[in-house]
Amino acid sequence: MSTSNSSDSPPENAVRVLRQFRIVFNAVRNHFRQVERVTGIGGAQLWALAVVSDSPGVGVTELANALDVHQSTASNLVRALATRKLIETRQSASDRRAVSLHVTATGATLLQSAPGPFSGILPAALAQMKPAQLARLERDLGTLIEALTPDDEAGQTPLADL
Image (cartoon, rainbow, N blue to C red):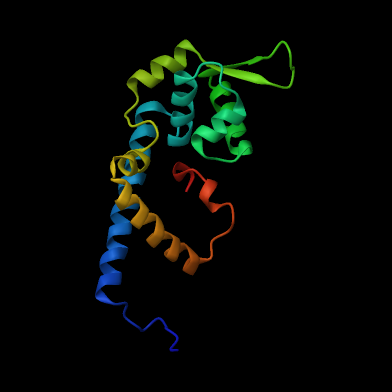
C-alpha cells in the first residue's frame, strides 16, 4: 500500500467532491453570518429560541433532544438566551430542579425578524431529500467519517459553533 505525501495530487473526482464540501460549508457559514447580522444572536441560539417558541414550557432536556445536542450545550444556549431576556425560565412547583422555558415578547419579536430556516439551511435541505438519497448520503459520509477518526462528541456540536 502506498502512502501519500504533500506532492501527490488527489484524483480529479476527489477535488470535485472537496469543492462540493466547500460550497456546502460556505453556504452554511453565510447563512449563520446573516442570522447573526440580522438578529444579533448565533444560529444555534436562534434555533433554540424557535424550539422554545414552538413548544412553550419545554424543558432543557427536551430542548437538547430537539436540537440533537448535549444537555450542557442546551443549558449554555438557555443561559445565553435568558441573559438577553429572549426567554424566561420558570421553576416547576413540584420539582424545584426542573425548569420550563418560555419565549419573552422580545424573543418573539426577534423571531419575526429572523431569516429562516431557524434550524439552519443544511438541516432544511437534508429534510427535503428523498429517503433513498439520505440513506446513500448517510452511508457514504459514514465511510468518510471512519477515515477521519473524529472525536466521539463531534456529532453533537452545532454547525453554528464550528
